[in-house]
Length: 629
Image (tube, rainbow, N blue to C red; front, side, top):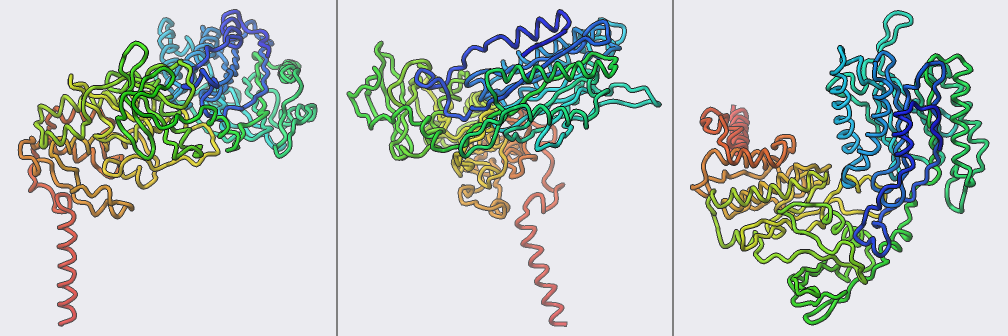
């Protein structure tokens, strides 16, 4: 790839980023195969060029980064193009800063985050920084301002982030499609002004699109120095000529791609150089920059290939006291179920550890093996005093298992049994720790999906620890295509939110619902809705449930604590609190309207079942009177 004619600042920043190698991201089984069991065989051809052209300085900046291995799988490849606004005094610096910072900061975000969240977070911070730098100028709009167009390629999808009048195109099956729209305001015949750009305002409004990739796609990014003088029709002709020069790569049973001999990148660069030269010959009055990317190979969605990756580590045999596993001495079987086993063990130094192993019942189940490996993968990425800590991340293993710290205590379900109708003073400190652990998952854009007392441990020192990550939904991983049929309905019915049971899209508010169920049970010793959540299978089943206020089951509960609980247990996620921290706050602070008298509310609000029963009785009586008359 080449970067031609960039101004000194942006050139240094962009080229350094292009040539730098990311540090390897360790998977749980990195010591064995170096990768997570995910499809990451996306291959992209790329080229780019930026030329000063007719202007005295080059205010454009371009950057592409295509990482290797797991980083390509979890974060994808990034292509960014920026055009510094000519009216801005720091336009050249703005575009250079935007390219280098976006690329470096995007790859620094957690690999559990989705592309949308990672990019949005980085762009919001970048925009505020540029806007802040612009305050040194008399008018911020004349400070650090530039356009921004980025394409991120991950698995089988592309993600577009766009603000300004740079453009992104897709060329597929002989047709050119403009993916972005120009954010300009036209005044008169010749005056055009940017309506949106990075650094223009403290609030940033970015266009976002998700696109499905197809093998053989071409993606072209340009600044206005090119597309103002070269029309879409001419661009389509040029891209058709580019494809005709390439020798299709094809294999038996696969679609033809565009990947060539080792000089393929040179071909992409040459196309970009010629396109820039054509724009200059067409009397372009601006800097000219473009990037060309080709989708050469998409990840293979072959379950046999994936199972081969997943099965590189064998399942451990059933273990018993006195046996050893990779130097760990098994002391006791702590838990055994159809899906897994948990053992108490000690390492060579005598430290107590817990070892979790998969069940041999699922030896041939690729989806189960993937979820077990992802369970330890996410566990290594959650760092919270209220989440069980996974150990020995980089230790070589002879079998599939993972190791956690040993916790001396009891499950929360045992604590509830021993403390029925616990006092508010006992419950709230524990709830604060539970919320802290849940929030640690949510910060990684991960939903636990199986919060229940059995998955919460309370040590004898009074510390709460969340355990069992087997049902977690990880946004960043969910974006990666797979041939596996993953379970969509996970968790325990007594504690699961309706949207989880019904198969709707889940959010952090599903964990909020589960946390409210646990809180209700801790305070009353009973499950909400008379314990009938587990029997619900349809939306109508949920609507038939009757909520009994917590203070009716435990008179020691303050009246003002029940409305927040009832709100968090709403069947509609939109009616719940925004997040778990809001629920925790409301349970600790009496709401201003908590003592609103019941008589001021309609019977429909207070007791919908009695309301409709009354309506039915009245309807029956009126029908009877009509018949008699």
